[in-house]
Each structure stands twice: as structure tokens, then as C-alpha cells.
Image (tube, rainbow, N blue to C red; front, side, top):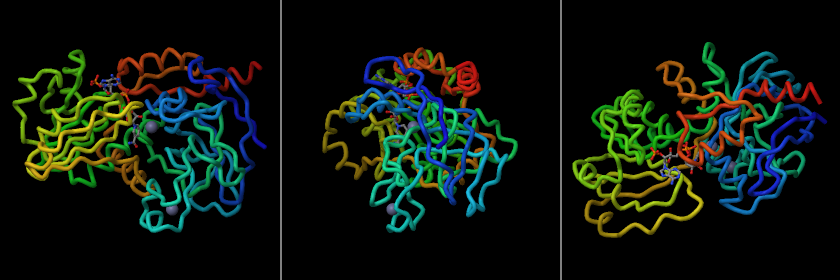
Length: 355
Ligand code: NAP
Ligand code: ZN
Ligand code: ZN
């Protein structure tokens, strides 16, 4: 077995604490990755705090993992020792359902295995995520980090990046389209950058007046304070697509009213408590759609990494140490991140060496 040093949640309220656990041995199809960086996703908080569902503790979260390959199984052909690689939210899936065969492992009909929130096929144990020193993953679920890409900045692409890239592609964001992004956090800031890089006109909706200038710097053509009804009214009936990343329950109707005929609002934010039900009339009067989207498949995640390398679309990150994770989480909970925390896992390795 391989000992992983980590920071884990032991119950819904207490701070994360140091914990050692065993990873499975490297199987014939597996890659062992020495974790260098892990991004902090709001889903880490929702899950570890049992906000979505009751969780079995201890639980290690983190699904924006970048590291170096240190060992490979005998069947592995796609990755070599020394490669810089990524692991996102998926570490396995059934591989034979219609969705897996269509490269949509994120919608696997038998349920994908989450990097956390899953059950490891090989051991039957709960999967444990990237706030740890090492991970073992089947090579088919490991991404190539493009040469020259900053590995710390690559980490947030593996969840925040793909979660907005996938709906922007599916609903065809591009030249001539008006795209709204709701919420300027980890997902939202990548949404602004990616939609802009795809050639769409981008309008950011935020509840934080202090983020207006940043929104424009990141690529938004305009920024609207979503609580300001007059400002919102300026955009009534204009949008082809709105990607809503907000991490809290809110009234969806003011955003639905901004869609044009056949426009779609895609919910990617996953609040702990449900949104109030939207009204029917704003939807039916302009044949508008309300949709949802979850991360993206492995092939599309690789495509997104390559797109980001080619167009130099990278996240704005704040580095944190593993020891400061609880303060970082408090700031995430207050929507006060510029715009993604990334944990430098060297800080955890130092702790392990001292033990
Ligand atoms: P984040 O960095 O915390 O950003 C969320 C943003 O939502 C905030 O920056 C804030 O933007 C806005 N917001 C407005 N009111 C809020 C409130 N009361 N509480 C919290 N946020 C509020 O979070 P994230 O990591 O981008 O994740 C956003 C959501 O997407 C989370 O619910 C997460 O679980 C979910 N998620 C879903 C998927 C998927 O596959 N669908 C993948 C990853 C994450 P302003 O300050 O600009 O208003
Ligand atoms: Zn995530
Ligand atoms: Zn499947």
C-alpha cells in the first residue's frame, strides 16, 4: 500500500485536520502521481460539510489535481514517469454504457466514480481526493498538462475550467452570440475568460460591486450588478446563453427574463438548498430553456486544456499552504477569492517529513 498524507474533514463543522491513509498499490493500468498542486473548489466545502448529502468521514476532498508521474503499471502507454499530469473530478466510470462510449463519462449511466464522493472499484473503499500527497488513478482518467503550462494554474482548469467550457461548447458560444456569466468566483471567472476567448460578447452578472473592474479586466464587455433592477432591465430579452455559477439559492426569474427567443440558461452552480421554482410564463412566452450541466468528459477535458494552452486562457490564482486551508475555506464561503485558491502541496510534504 502507498501511504498518503492529507488534510481531511472528520465531521461537518470542524476544521480540516492532518490524516494519513493508504492508497491502493499501482495496478497494471494505473499511474501513481506525486501531487504538486490542488485547486480549492466550492464543491469541496459543500461536500465536506455534508451540505449536499450525509458524508462518511474521514473525507479528503480536492478534484483539481496536478502532479508528477512517479510510477506506472505495466499496461500504461499514455503517461510516463516524469510527466506533469492532471486529475479532475472523475477517476473511473463503467466504460461500456452509451454515454461512456460517447466520451461522456461524466454522465455514465452506471454513475461515474468521483475523485471524491465515489467508491473505488478496485478496493470498494470511498475515494479520497487531492488534498493529499499522492494519488493512484487508472491511466484513462489522467489528463496531459500541455508542455509549458504553469502547473499551479493548470489545477483549476480540471474542474472550474471544464465545468464552464463544456456548456459554452455545447450551447455554441462564439462570434455573434451574447453570453452571460452569473457569479465571479472560480467557475465564473473561467467562464468570462473562456467565452471571451471563444469570440462571444460576454456580460458578467455579480452581486459584488468590488468585482466590477476585475470582471472587465478578465474579458467581460460589460458588468451588471444583478441586484440592480434597472441595470438588469437594460438586457431584457438579449441573451443566447447564460451560464449560472452561483453557489447559493436565488431567484432565477430575473435571469430567465434576459434570454432571447430560444435562449438557454444553464445551471452549473450547485447550492446546498434548492432555488425557488422559476415561473412558467417567462419560459414559455419566448420558448426559453432552463438546463443543467456537470463537469465534462475526459476527452473534452483534454480538449479544454489544449484550448487554454493555445489561447493562453489561464485562471487567476491565490496560492495557499495546506496548513492555511481552513482560512482559505472561510474566504471561499464569503465569495472572497481572487479567483481560485490553489494549495501548494510542498507545504504538506514538509509536514510529512517532520513527522
Ligand atoms: P465560488 O468560487 O465560491 O464562486 C461562487 C460565486 O457565486 C461567488 O463568487 C459569488 O459571485 C456568487 N454568489 C452569490 N451569492 C452567493 C452566496 N450567497 N454564496 C456563495 N456564492 C454566491 O464557487 P465555485 O467553485 O466557482 O463553484 C460555484 C458553484 O458551482 C458551487 O455550488 C459548486 O459546488 C458548483 N460546481 C458545480 C460543478 C458542476 O459540474 N456543475 C462543478 C464545480 C462546481 P459574485 O460575488 O460575483 O456574486
Ligand atoms: Zn469542483
Ligand atoms: Zn458508463
